[in-house]
Length: 239
Image 1 (cartoon, rainbow, N blue to C red):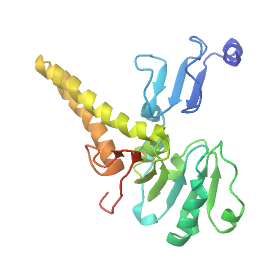
Image 2: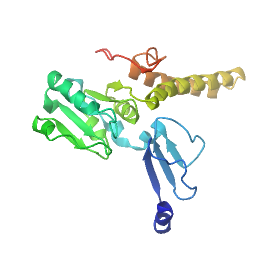
Image 3: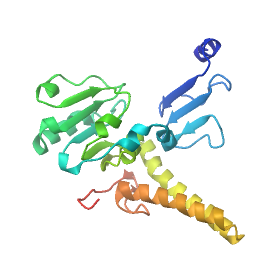
Image 4: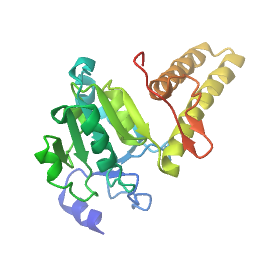
């Protein structure tokens, strides 16, 4: 109903929503572009729907980011709501492992504000920023949940340490595996009928998915990423 009212007085309507927003029921014609900040692809084939990691392609800020391992700066972004209360746990750990002025804490829009004591101790706290790109630029490491933040950090070239606390995170790991396998199969089918341009291009696309998986868990084939009950991996200096 709100979109219908907006449509009546605006020339262009762009709707942006995350995983938790019920956007599937939006009436056709009430928006010009729907950007789903979801890690799962659901609406392939719709011209005015931009889903998954594709929406990052329209934000040049991430391409301009440059990681800086020597800076020692850590960005902590544990989701819009941090339902498992990991923010304080991470900050307590970083108190002992890093200088507070080298830590940036991103507080999601659905999370209760952090206690003032953390800023008093020197931690930089940002409440619901419009983009993570400024915080990721020049960072050495990002601690986050396995959702869109992980893809944003990877787009910025910043190494990530991921936590996995929901079925959605596990589906994300499986989705990466599915994308790589299905893209490879499409290329193989094209090769079977000697349609080499498509076979080659699918091979390149499969390489993108494999390389993204490698950046997350260290294995292009996702070894150790998805396992019963969740995901698991380590990040070493080489990664």
